[in-house]
Image 1 (spheres, rainbow, N blue to C red):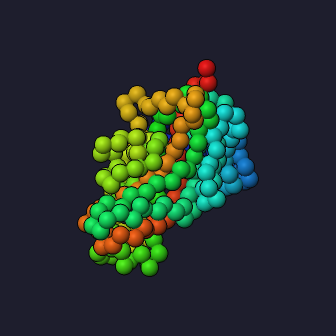
Image 2 (cartoon, rainbow, N blue to C red):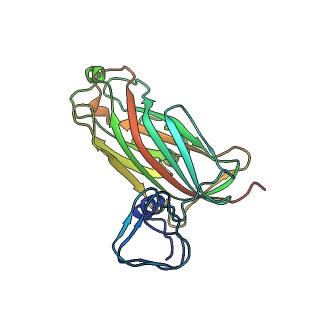
Image 3 (cartoon, rainbow, N blue to C red):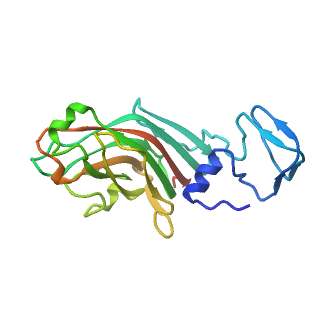
Length: 248
């Protein structure tokens, strides 16, 4: 069974539902397996199978040639080997504060989430799923209770009052900008998916300065009624699929 970097297969592989191997695994009949299960090779089980615990099917962790997460609200788990990686970043109320621009102007801001290891990085794919919220006291800065905007993952921080990916494409070059609409200043989980960053992936030359991952946010200009900075909270999971290509 081959592994293609689609959003669903990234999730399946990490959740133990898809073995990263070329052999066939068949489950039939009455078998019960509990605890941490590891399956390798061609395995056949007969009977009615109940699998509980944490199956391990190719999603092993690594500490070699990995990057570093940024901030107390972000955790990182590194899967793969010394060269082929899937990095899982979990954000828990990670704050992004806008610039507090002019009234009725676009508010924008970003935060660094992750630093790749120094070297050449080939980013194959990225998946970003976030729930967005803000404190109710922020309501005074908006024209209504359904604030709109977009968010994405970029190798650079957003630095201008315009939609992500407009003139500076590096503010959403890891995961394309996703539109959102808030409801009473909280929004159901949104999914921003870039199953293939470009047709052939994206290469970041981080030999002299390590490549970065930023979570960027903008709100639509017509939404803002004041000039105060607004803090938006992101809670969700990001998967980065990438290859470490060396540092020479």
